[in-house]
Length: 409
Image (tube, rainbow, N blue to C red; front, side, top):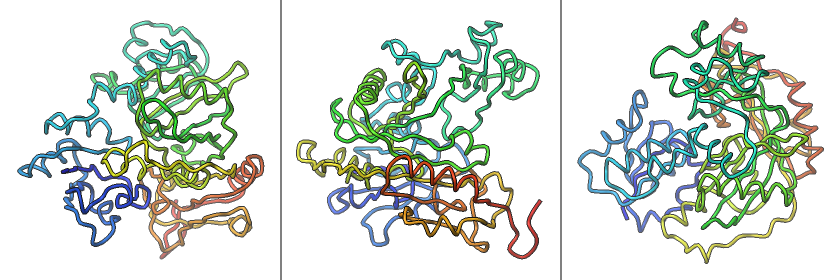
């Protein structure tokens, strides 16, 4: 089989060679040079660099122009799902279509389908509908976000619904024109945020793990550290997960589902047919024995029949992960203080820390190779892992620095 992979996520996370038999299949990777460099040397495959400066679909199609037809197109990053569908359509390759993927990317479509299944969602309107309506059906805190947003980029929270609309109309937070069609507003629902991760085969959960965030993805986008700690997957949470996935037609896939815990029960936040970011994959494997991306690749490329896949029995151990962002520092190097006491804790499973002379990314990233500080904690119980992360977030400081001079402004 000839397989085309839109390669964005590092091989360290995906483990392509463990999931795809490269001796049997002809695999072509198209990606930026730094991501292609993460693939194992000597792997039997074709590597094609794309500029990573323009439209992803166009770059991929230009990269493979003139090559023999492909049988499969894979895109595992949430940023690439729609582009993957468009590449399939252009090349005439079977697989998930843009229409099928839309409920997993478009936040208005996904919430409408979840609400239609009788599950609670935040009240919401597309931005054009909200601007036409004049007044929103809620008055309190309001979230403005892209329909297909990821990592909470370009998300804004306003104290009232009226202020949110004023910010759009008068503040120019979203320019007039077609761009407004790509945004929505929704009521802000307060409460801890949980995420459930796993894999389904024909609608049956093969492996699942629940976690609760320490911090928020929006806070990370704004410059604060983020983490999550694994928690008990209660029968209620398991049923809610199954109902949400069925509502948006995720049946055979990896998934990452988020919800808000409220006194009245769980409120749907969003879902994706993908694995979670940061160190969700690693902590999931530590707790369940299942490496999600490579297991999924095994299944979809025919390496192992679904019925023959091995699903280890979890031993009840729980883990957590943490990361500090760098995209708001305004510098390519940083200084970390207050970390030593945490680094030496017996709860630390893995610790990844940049020195002052090691560069960091100036764009938003969760990859531990890109950011100042990241790691995994555990095993431990949920409460002590949560306490460790909360204390570390309150104590450790990350400051911009020029290794050849004073701290940057």
